[in-house]
Length: 205
Image (spheres, rainbow, N blue to C red):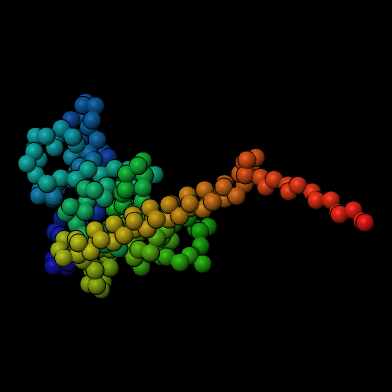
């Protein structure tokens, strides 16, 4: 466990965020939405970050549909997120901290990609829906890791490959649209074939 995940990860996933900071109740930015990787303690607010945790490593937690998320740009600097499904929310790529309950009406039948732990349907061929599910896999099987290492380059290459493939797909679709538009464009009048001069049949002698 200690070799496969950093000591602060489990504490991060069990922390309650977005409560009012007891030290800055009357301040405008008093919600506790930050976590210190060095102190591994309770969540704190913006003002605590600039005083008590000024020189510490900290990440900011955000919310999406009442669930805690963290930006990929922040978390990937301190954690190996390989295999965790990411989403684009408000123009930023994020991932969920913990498992989310699925609606009872939803069915995984016919869904090609499922979380290995909770069975939640995934958009892309990832293994887990959240960091919490990846940590559960590490505890149960030990066939995954959250520690940064040689997999950093692999993650970057995979991400660049996905971006490249998306760009190629967009270019391909754009090209197909242009081809389709060109086939519907009426030809220029100058390019129309002129009718040849009619030739009369020779008069009989």
